[in-house]
Image 1 (cartoon, rainbow, N blue to C red):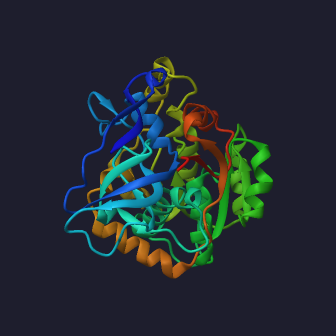
Image 2 (tube, rainbow, N blue to C red):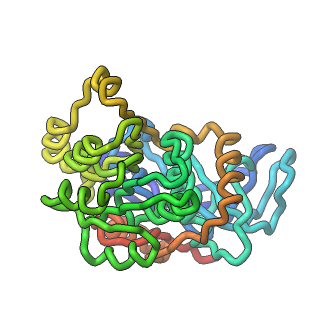
Length: 339
């Protein structure tokens, strides 16, 4: 059996190439998934740029999430079978039409969801839920600021927060995304710009700011952190300001942004009674038990299926990446693989 996969060595996305190679039989606890859809994530871009320490050395296949059909099962596999429709996560390797994966990392696609929706769910919903509930300790009725409100994580974060009757303020990079976010149920939406501090004050309307889902960085981190109430928390799960269009990282921009990054004195956190916590879902990959525990809790919340805003064919994957880099997307960008 063969697979087709996009491969490159980190540093220049222009080197991304579709290659064919043999796919061995699945190991005893593995299944083979014939991939039907691939979800794109900012982590993919940073890995291809070589900006994550977790990026594999040498040539590798990017991608963290997928959905498809099980076509083979290992000798010790139980609970799933050939023909099952599944969605899953992997620590790289999802930009392919076929993969072997440990059975712990596949889950059934909910009834009524298509493959693209399955590939749009796990990374986003786990990021939102783990960040807000486990690290952020979101409590009923609190106020939360969610950056990149029209993105995959932002949409699901708002839906989860609303289950806790939170007052949600979303931020976006373009006025074109405001109506979409309001339709998603955000209480207030801010277009990030020079007036961000005043806009945040206006949106708060005298409320305390209890929690920030932080994925932008720079001055937007600093302003929101300053406005956090005592016992408030900023949950850092990304740094979009370091992203840039093009095939290579913009190293001058990276250095400039790095030198101007916010600096916090740990002692000041105790004096201010505020917290900053960070996580990268890639590093949680080995904790499969935690993933299933979080997903069980999420199932009880009964949030709607994810919003897939953009669909591309497998052959258009590089084009999908370029759109994703542009910052003009709303909802999830998914690449669909023909059977």
